[in-house]
Length: 101
Image (cartoon, rainbow, N blue to C red; front, side, top):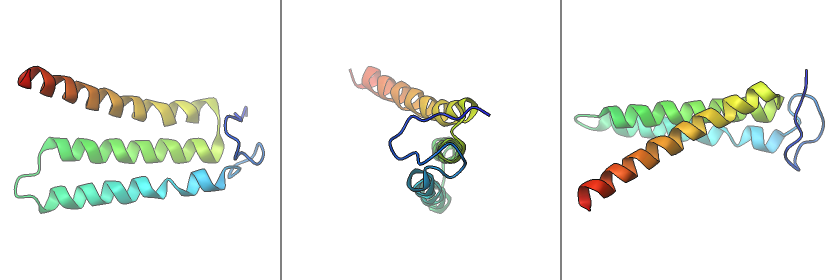
């Protein structure tokens, strides 16, 4: 299996060769939980909150997979959710600008 060496933290070709990067992905899951909890406490949580939770979990999962295994496939799993989030935020910003402008 081909492994990628794209970061200075990478300690070797095997799994868990980026222990700090891999462990910091827990923050994504804590953030997703916080957004979910905030949305659940709202009287009428919208689809926006749930989409954000899904994107945060997908980013955390993809990033964890990439930083543990670092293969071309896990790189895609890392980058696609981030691109989805950037697209979602950009679209919302452009829509808000169009409405206010």
